[in-house]
Image 1 (spheres, rainbow, N blue to C red):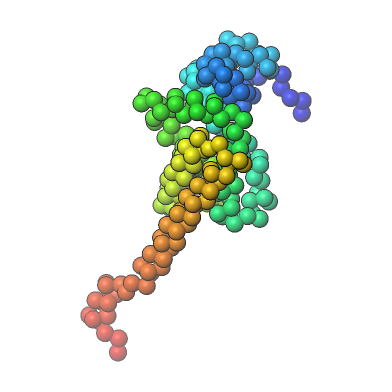
Image 2 (cartoon, rainbow, N blue to C red):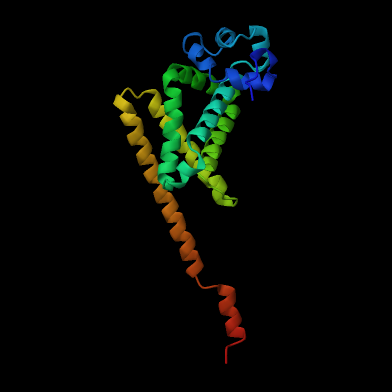
Length: 221
């Protein structure tokens, strides 16, 4: 199928096309109309039409950029690649892949985080963090539907958020400091999961009080 010409794109398609292009310009101009206009010029779309795809302005652009990173991660980690990895390596790989995709536009991320830290944008920041964690777990093959579904995402949101803050100030070669920090955080999470598993196993071995009382009432002959 031939690619859709920019002038024939719907606003949703235009949003998808522009999202990964905007941060290269936001590095210099911030997340504003100027950055959007320059990204639109790359694909030959008039700036006024491009603005229609991001009615919320900067926060819509940031949301779309993060969504494009999620999509890139899904393509980079197909099922056959994921199945060959241990769960720890899946999560580590997914977190680092996101940061590696972001890395050419590190200053754009810094500006984006400053915008998301504004009081009126904190609910959006929380939603985007949860969405990133949810999508990483889904790519990693998680199918939990019980409480673990939520606890895993809460833990990964914390790991990804704190690792991102370390990354922002990391000037080490090959992001060595970020990788070391991420490894430590994943170690902490694995310890928590081990404790939870042991606790669940201990609960299963605890004698049932109701069963014990029933045997007192109706003793086995």
